[in-house]
Length: 196
Image 1 (cartoon, rainbow, N blue to C red):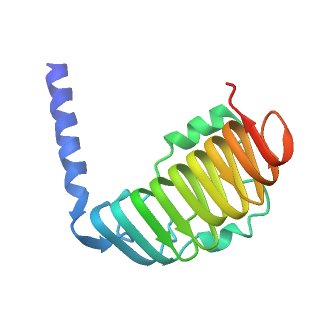
Image 2 (cartoon, rainbow, N blue to C red; image 1 turned 90 degrees about the vertical axis):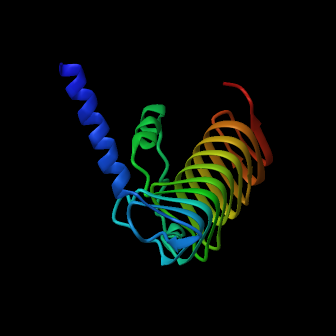
């Protein structure tokens, strides 16, 4: 009997959560909480005060974002251990973007990007799977390509970093830039690590 009651409560809870999430097609604003957008996701800014449970599946456009502050980050914003990275991965994301993100200034916060992210100033994300292009890129875990005019920094990097300065604390890939740092060595022009 307890099992049946537990199952009924779980089903009711899932229905309530599903009812709270609104779905929009072909366009809507990412500034609304509990939203799933298929198509075009737009907004003037993306400053957030916590998890919004917003999902963009398509093209996301913003003019002003937290990326404007990324250039002023005073110290390394990335985690320093596998356990800290595991905690970041458990954290509820501000937004999940599946597709292309274009922001005039960039994004910063507990974002997860699966696709391409373009920002004039900077990106500070929890996870990126794909391509990130900005003046400054800070990511806790990046799989793919990071391209920065100035600085690429991440805790875990699998892929390619191209920038004036590249730094990764756990690297499985190649770094190309004026100065490159990973857990094995520091080198100008090119650096690499493929060992576990």
